[in-house]
Amino acid sequence: MSNEIEAIKDPGLPAHVHRKADHDPVAAKRAERQVAILFGISALGTLLLIFSYSFIPDDVFIFIPVMGEQNAHQLGLGLGMAISLFFIGMGAIHWAKTLMPDQEVIAHRHEFRSPDSDRKEFVQAVKDGAGAAGLGRRSLIKRSLGAALGLSALSPILLLRDLGPLPGNELEKTTWKAGTHLVTDPGNRRIKASDLEVGAVAQVLPEIEDPEHRHLSDIAKDAVLLIRLRPDEFNLDADRLAMTHEGIIAFSKICSHMGCAVALYEQQTKHLLCPCHQSTFDVTRAAKVIFGPAARPLPQLDITVDGEGYLVARNPFSEPVGPSFWERDSR
Ligand code: FES
Image (cartoon, rainbow, N blue to C red; front, side, top):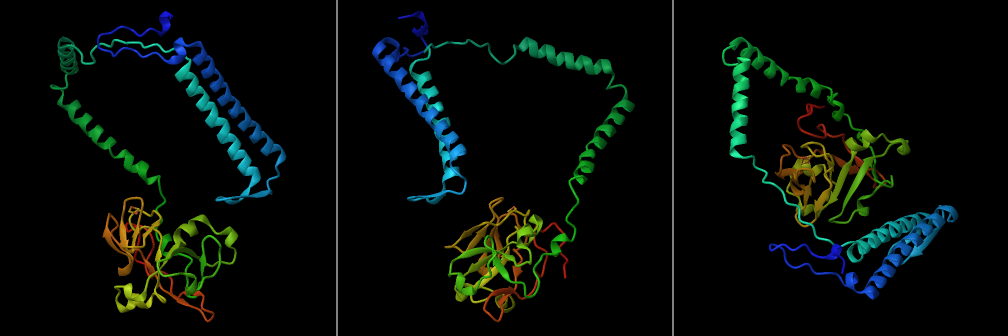
């Protein structure tokens, strides 16, 4: 056995256990073959990737049980790359664990804490420096330095101004108007009350003429969540109830705390949750805040149906959507 694979003798360490491949040439040969097989599979993965890239057109679809219809070109690229990277990693790990030098090394380190004498010396040096600078005696310098440091703390405020501009009254203007149809997002299809089962939740946007070019900032402002409850599950005053339709209630999706998307709905409790800071809104009580930092309910959109039964907004939002620290005196 070579010196390289001998455990370093130290009374504080348990005896080193050598691997089989360290002293058994047959086991070493077997491990070598295993590593080669893993690298070989990785190479096949890369060939699959190259083949998919070069020879499978990107409009070919194949049916795979469980996964359904899949784009063969992209599937080949993804699978090929995954196999290539996974098995090259597996091969390297197996190689390191079975065949690479297995030597234990002890690195002795000195204590991190400085000796007391060094610490005293340092404190004395700081005091001597302050004394030599005359800070205690030169009160004019001391005061002016204090003023300079204090004022310099204000500079971040100026930098913060550059983060703007603030949205001002921009959030008062969403695309929702009286009579605007609600359309699915994604899909851009008008919806009827019957499309939504009790307990279901859906994201909708206002219908516009050119949905392909909907502006991202408009999507953020206009996004609305539709939730359908049984009408008797609401705990609303008459005005709020009149803003619902057959158990469907609509709220702005922008959290009234800091503007994240309120994206989680707990069907059992009928709570909407904001994932950013856990503000929780009670759907049955007009999105009243029941937990978290949000200070206001989510604005409710007044909805009804048109002559053909499609859901439409009866009115625009009656208050600005979004965080409560932005301007809110709309209408
Ligand atoms: S942004 Fe929703 S809780 Fe903070």
